[in-house]
Image (tube, rainbow, N blue to C red):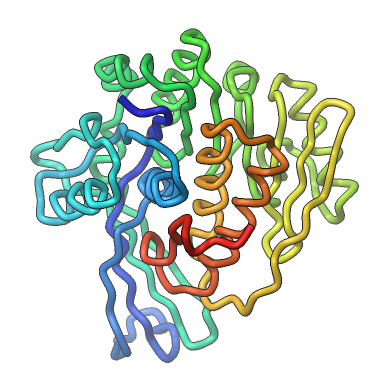
Length: 300
C-alpha cells in the first residue's frame, strides 16, 4: 500500500491547435491534434510519483479505450491503481481543448466516469486510505465524495491536502477537515469570499480560511511565486524565472512536489522549494502529464 493516496479525476485531454477560434457556426481547420492523459487527480498522482513519492490513485474510468489507456499510463508511472475501477456503460472523462495562436483556449469537460465516484466508493477503498499517511483531493469528482473522503481521512488520523479546483465555496465542515489547502489566486477568492487585488488581500483571505479551521495554506501565484500562510505567520516565495510555453499542469506539478516532499519528512519550506522547481519545468513543456517533470530533472 502507498504512503500517499490521491482521490480524484482521470481524464483524457483532446487538444486541437488552431490559428484562430471559430465563430458560432463556423468550421476552421486545425493545425495539430494531441491526445494527452490528464485530469487533476491523475496529474497530481503522476507528479507525486515522478517526484519521488509512493502513491495510489482512487477514481473511475469508463469501459472504453480512453479508460484502458489512462490506467495503463498510471501503471507505467508506478502508481498503485487498485483503487481505480472501470464503470461500464459510462464514458471516460474527457476535456476537449482548443488552443489558438495567441495561447488562448476554450475547454469543454465531460466528467463521465469521474462523477460515478461516490461516498460509497470511497468506503469500498478504505483499506487504501487506512494504509496511507497523506490524502490528496481536488473538486473534479462529486462534492459529497470529496467531503466524505476528507472527513474519513481525518477520522483515521491522515494528513489531508485539498486543491479547491474547480473553484467553489466550501462549507465549514469541509474546511475543518483540511490540513493544507493549495488554491491559486482565483480559487482563494472564491473559497474565502474575498476580493484579492494585492498580496495583503491574499494574506487576509488566507487568514479568514485559517480562522474557519484550515491548518495552513499555500497560495500559488503563477509567475509571482507562492504564499505560505498559517496562524500568525506568512511568507512569500519567488517563482523561478523561465520562458513559459504552456501552464497546463503547472499547479498539479506544484501540488505533487509538496505532497512528495512532505511524505519524505521534508519541511514545508523544503517542499515549496521542490514544488516551485517542478512547476518551473512543467511550464516549459506542452500538455498535462506530458509536461510533468521527473525528480532527476529538478534543480532545487
